[in-house]
Image (cartoon, rainbow, N blue to C red; front, side, top):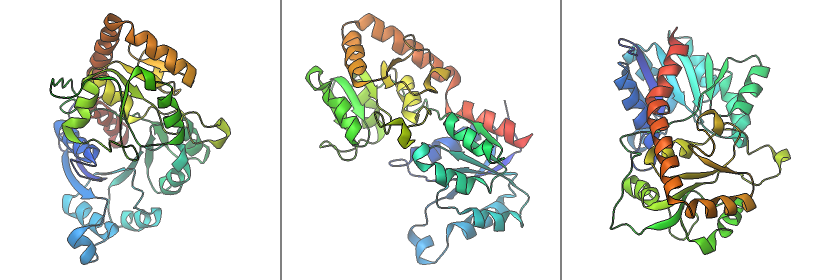
Length: 315
């Protein structure tokens, strides 16, 4: 589908090393025929020195681009009151796409009231918005096929199980249960540190199993931080093409068929059992990974997500 002639201002963080998603979204919009102008959410460098804060920069960009739609990806730095002020002087519609879990639900609800429509990756959060009379829709995250692809490299140390993510107590407990099977771990707070660029892709591409453990896995449900949403890693790992072992967030089966395209676990004990089963079945691992990659490319790219977002937001 083409959205030729549509004029969109995209507000996000743009950095190919630390914040790839902003650039990926801009490129995907362009492939859909959209005329895109970008606005960096962070106020840095000369903008900070000259006092050019996000609201004033954004209004200038909207006016100069004659935007039909302002798409804000998360937008924690953009207060609802600033949007209220800007939108009285522009004709654009406003859409928020919020990619964080219920630990930031209050932020999502606070900024969400200023938008015409909110898209949220966690179904449990969607219901909270709708309960307040908001126009809210479920929209999962996605992958960037040009970047998230099989990247086997004989020079990269092979792993039995690979995990990349920030250090958290419950994650550490889950990983400890697999230690004797051979787990390679990267990310903020871990000894090997984070990975960027193609190194991130190689870590998973050169492993037998790609492990995904969502934030707050194992926490008591009453704390309300775990939620239902499938994180971005679900789609990234599928596109990379290594079999994915993932905790069973409720929204994951909406996108991948358990045991056919992804392998899920509910507990640390089940994580151990499923990992052992996958390591003992190389043919099965390959088949699951191939089906997941085919599904990701056919249905779960950033372009697919934005096609739906634009269809809903511009009609």
